[in-house]
Image (cartoon, rainbow, N blue to C red):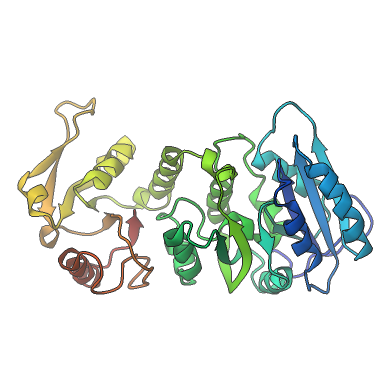
Length: 376
C-alpha cells in the first residue's frame, strides 16, 4: 500500500478536517481527566487539532469534566467531538477507540489514555516522524508514574534500538512501542483495520500491532520522553491474563518464524522452555529436535517426555549441552538487566551481571551461532 506523506485535508464527513485527531477513550476517569486534558491544551503543534472523546458508559463525573474542558479547548482552537453511550456496562477499550476514530476527522491519529499526560511537544514531534514514516506506528519514550513501578519493563521499552523494535516483537507482553504513545496516519490505520472489540480481557493493542506487522508496517520511536504513563490497579491492562498474551505470542512466533523452519532447538530445558514446547501446535512441536541448557542437572536427565501428549509413544526430546546443540534456536529465558543489541534481536544483560558463568556461556554461543529469536 502506498500512503501519502501528507493526506489531503478533506474530512470523510465532508468539509474541512483537522490535521491531527487526539483519540481519547474514557471510562470512569474523573481522577485523572483534568491533568490529561490540560496536556492536550498545552500542545505546541502549529497545525489544526481536534480531540475526539468517546465515553464508554462512565458512572462517575467524567462527562461533566469533559464538557467543562470542551469550552476551554475550543476557545483555544482545538475542536472537541464527544460521543458515547450510557449502557449499564462498558463495551471495552477496542470498541471505544474505534468509535472515537470513526467520529473524528484528522488526517493523523494520536492515541491517548485518559489517565496519562502528554508532554507539550508530543504531537509536533510525532507528526514530524509520521511524515517520514507513513506506514509506521510512531511511539515515544515514557516516564512511569509512580517512578518505581514496572522499572524493568519501562527500561525495556525506552532502550530498544530501532532494529529491536521489530526483532523483539516476540519477547514482550505487548507491542514494542506501548499503545498510549501510538501515532499514525488515518490512511494507514484504515489499511490495517479496526481494533478488536472483544471487550475486557482482550489485548486489542497487541492484536492490532500483529496485524500491522502482517501488513508490512514499520515501527518508529521518537527518542524523547513525551508521555507520563501511569500505573495503577484500575488500568485496563490488568484485565488481560498473562496466559492470553502468551498464547498470542506463541501463535505469532509460529506464524512468522517457525513455519519457515524445518527443525529447531529450544534453549532452556527448564520450566519456560518446557512451557513453550507444550504451547506449540503439533506441527511446530514435531520440528523440535532438542532442548539445550548449561545446567548439568537438567542435561543429565537425558530427555524431556511430554506426558500430556496424545501421541503414542509419547514424545521424548533430547536435552543437550549447548555446545552439542545445533541452530536455529528459540531462546526461552528470563534474564534481568538492560537490553543489549548484541546480534540480530538477542536480549542479554550487561557483561558480568547476574549469573556470570551461564550468561558468559550464552554470550559466547550467540556470537558463534547467531540466534535470531528470543522468548522470555
